[in-house]
Amino acid sequence: MRILIVDDERQITRVLRTSLQSSGYEVTVANNGLEAFELFRTAAPDLVITDLAMPEMDGIELTRAIRRLSETPIIVLSVREQETMKVAALDEGADDYVTKPFSMPELLARVRANLRKIAREEPASAELTVGDLYIDTPSRTVRVRGDEIHLTPKEFDLLLLFVNNPNRVLTHKFLLRHIWGSAGEDQPEYLRVLIAQLRKKLDPTDSSRYIESEPWVGYRLRSTLTTS
Image (cartoon, rainbow, N blue to C red; front, side):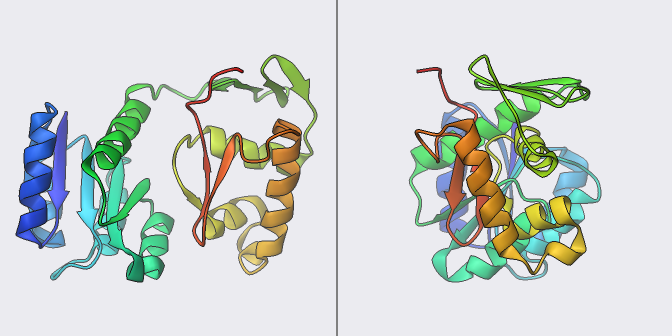
C-alpha cells in the first residue's frame, strides 16, 4: 500500500516516513499542498496523510482538489487551535483526523482502518452489513443483532449515511445538509434530537454503543463492534 505524507515540518515527515515504512507501507513525502497534488496525480497513493496549515496550498485546498479526482482516504493532522480548519477539511471530504501531538500507534490504527474501508468497498448493494447492523435498502428493513427495529424515514436515512461511511467522522454540517437539505444547516437541534432517537432504538441500554460523538465536530459509526 502506498501512502502520501504532506507536511511542511520535516521532523514530522521523517518520523512518519520511518514508522510507516517499518509497518510495510511505501511512502512518498511532499512539503506543501501543491507538491502533494502533483505527486498524487502521478504516484496514485492508496491513502493521504496531510497537515492543515501549510504554504502554497493548505490541507483544506488539497482535500478539495483530491476529491475532484478521487475518493482516496484522507487523514488530516491538526493542532487543537485548528478546530475550524479541521471541521472544514472534513466538510470538504477528509475521512478522518488525528490531533497533534499524537501517538504513532493511534495514527497507524487510523491508517489501517481507512485502508480496510477501501479494501472492502464493492459496488452498491441492496443489503448492507456493518458489525451487527444489517440494512435491506429496498424494504428499508433494519436489524440489530438479528432483531428488527422500526425507524422513521429520517432515522433510516441517517443510519444509511453512517453505514455507508463506517468509522468516518461525519460533520454536523454534512449530516444536516444530507438529511434536511441546505435549509437545515443552521438547525443543529434537529440533528441532536434525531441522533438521540436513533441511538435509543439501536441500543436502549447504551446510547453510544454504535454512534460516537466527536465533540464540536460530528459523529462516527463504530464498525468494530462484536455481539455481546
